[in-house]
Image (cartoon, rainbow, N blue to C red):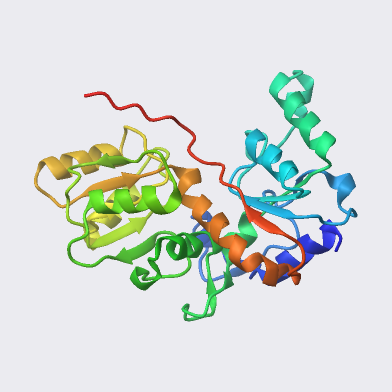
Length: 301
């Protein structure tokens, strides 16, 4: 099967429609928008000239780092399906890198050319939905449903599409126990907890990006009595400050944070299980390759 056909089959398998408000945080709601074959995010990031090559294997990953590219070549895969951009900017624009003779860009490009690898980003389509029998409408966000599947948390899920994602955990769950579970199941090196590690957790959410202003998220936490925020990003301002003050006042609030890529990577790990069905081939090898922790963790007492 040609690489182009593999990609086409994947796109046809995914829902390909999004609620604009749920996906982008805009004011329009209830209106499903068709994505089309490509979007600003979902496109060939590299290797356009090799789309008609026979697919020798597929690697799924969150971010196609140099190590992931090397591993794909090592196992004989010439298609990488990733969730995040490859060249360090929204839209994966490369002209600015070429114009400035960026050394890292040149070396990474050289590897991709040498190995004749195609890189396809699957972001919007994957978030739009994959088939899921547990979901009321038969669709679930491919990333966060995969996250729940990999963690054994589907029985705790309260919704299958749209940010934030809600979980109701059983009595006895704490921020510490959630952290250990994440580290073990997702093969990570470290986790950050805001608030007391033994804070009891019943109601948890994965919110939208936490990159600055957090008024909406703080209001939601307060209104719905959320105990734990499984945030992807965490900065010192706004949300982290609020949770720390809340915890110091004896209110049941905590953040458990493993990072954006580590959170969404679970969905790409789960993709390894359903991708053969999606691309209509059991003969093409499919392998998840972990891009892994972005940071080293050093703790000194």
